[in-house]
Length: 622
Image (tube, rainbow, N blue to C red; front, top):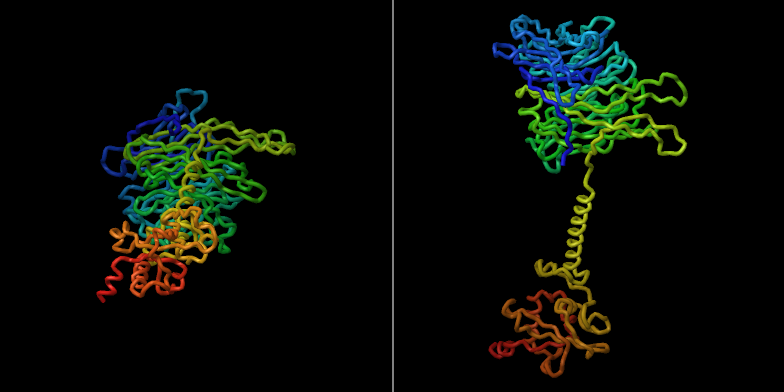
């Protein structure tokens, strides 16, 4: 049974396409969307929502945008300047302005916090800047992707935007500084051969960032710093030559930290979704490639992914700080309006870092009537340094009782916020005498790893099948005594004689005496019991025509028995048989699959043969 999360839902008056939480306030969610340019009657808006209650969402403030312009297609919260939170958005200009070659698609809004002295005051939303970043002036070009790197300084932030439906696709990298105005400053542009499917950006060190972007099958990174660099292909989804199946295509990518990245890929023809965690190369410029570190297949009901969001529950306090043990929470939105939650463990020891245990928590369904267009986790603040510095002091993690996950649906005009409970791990070290571990939080809900019972049962079935195949192969080859009847299921010409040891009173080698080894199969199959008569070396065996089997085998039945002078008075050795009887016996044994000409007649000596009826008559008639 899936765990239940507290859920709050709100229906807006316009289609919602994107959302993001305020980095400084997890109870404040910013949503953007609208009906686009035209006279549809549905306006374009940016809304500030109060999500402090786990059961209710309230509209704190809204800004009506021009109906002559496009709707809000992308949105990201940024720096805080004084009491104003900056919000970056993608909004195409009016058709008239675009036809004039002026499309100021990159907008910067400011959301002022209400004064604490006024309990009934609302958030004030103001447009602060609008810019044209893309070189393409096509009427269909719009700002499809927007991502900003979390800022550690609080005064400087780097981000990236990518085009959609452009004749010449591109990615533009910008930065914003609160000390020099809020308008973006262009750092560089990338011209792409194919439109970027998704992108993300992260700060990797002081004054250094890294951009990751992908198309359907290729993952690239670009180092951003004081010196210029070129994009590097670090991973290409391989073609499955063995099966000829179509390879999965990238849909969304997100950085986990500077060393790991997670991607959601759609299988061919909507056959499923796979999550892949990659270890990034230390030096991509020297030919390093990303390595697959962990992967998981989403439930079979999930056919295509549409959105991806990631939250680090123990973020570092600076870009140069080493990431310790932490847990990531991953949300994947699907085409069927469901959201699948995963946890991923990051383990750090000395200079070794691993990502392990990519396990599902639950799948959330039925909250949106239409596909989900945006996902966002609330921000987890990094630990604060201790007030009094000392050798044993460790940063203090802010108290976090829950993590919020917001999702928006465009056609349904819905906003849903799920509250995920967290719990604090013990700081006591497992090693006696060692210093306490840094405080951190993990999801209170238990994730589900692979079921060991299923693995054991599956392994047992595989072992049993392989054992049966091996037993059957050895039986057919005549290397072991028949026990599962494999020799009766294959053509006779596949068979080899079985070993000379048999069951019953003939199982001792000294009882078989000089009898031919090819008789062992007869003895084993018929489980012959001789009794105590046959003690001593050289006990004789007699072959007679089996009348009971003649009707089934077309006259090829052969019966093996211990020689009895009264019952087998007419039995003769091979040398004593007339030529007609020898021919009849050779034919019968050969058709029964127990003798071939290559074996020669020597193997038949030392065995007594009964008379085959009709052979004398055939000889006389001949």
